Length: 406
Image (cartoon, rainbow, N blue to C red; front, side, top):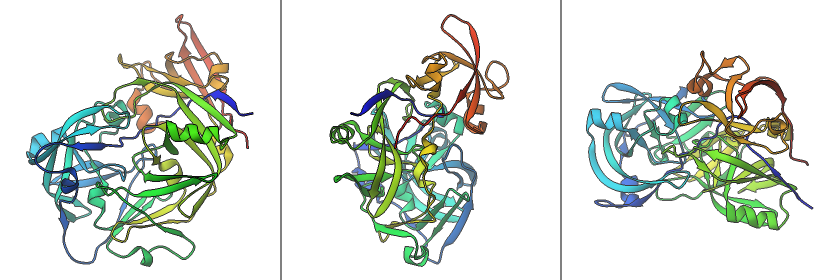
């Protein structure tokens, strides 16, 4: 019999914008996405970057000013409200925007005359106008916009999260991927997402989105997860309880999230072992698994290859049993807890306030953005100082634990 546990992700946040639209006035969404062009000629550029929590942020130039843009295959291109206020780009459409948590808001689409990456111009590309400060994590990242799939589609892109390099070229994928890479075709949608088919235990799920804006493992809608659970695909199922703030609009939501592990599975012809999956609004494959490969995406030929694989071990799923969030009064707190996990067994409960995390002191020296941008876990233990609901301060050391069984 399967055991059901309460489970919360490791102690770091997960973020996903996952932006979708319902077309409004002026121009249909598909037509907006098709806007833009690039200059003819041979292109082969490489960008070095420093990832933040598994996310890729690169410099772009708009009208002589350098900005920080998130590289996100799971979203269309975007600019901040401040960029739009400064440059006043032509509004070409309005749409209802829905973020990763299902929150909806009306937004504008504009046409950017020229956007430069490594000196290469992208001309008359479309982008939505967003507020990236509503979500506390995005606010800390200080991004000014998004390089989305509708802009990437002109070139072949190679994403190397092992060596922190991003390459784009108009060479075919066949000239880039080596013979040991796993190559497969993909299908797409109106915003040029990269979509694969997933299979586990003879269950096939279509339209899994390759999402470099999702710094987790794998996400599936609850009804699909439930079907797999009913068919005994998972050895164990865990429940993450607490709140999440992963969407663009930054609205905290309380809900239970189921989490399981596939011992074996596949995306098209790519075979995987020990893949963690959680329930969510959408079907996403995130950077926790994407960083294990040198990935090349050729939008023109709709082909993707996975090279230089790194084997996933079960120990990588070890957890301290809590996640961290930022409260409305700017206090760092435990956002969710694993019942019977290391944090819960130490007496920690959701919404308790955190004062220290190893060398980080949130009372006087560090803030939430320091944690987002600078904190790095080392080893298999962590020292935490926190206040319980009675105001009593506690110092405790947690040791990571693998809760999933083979």
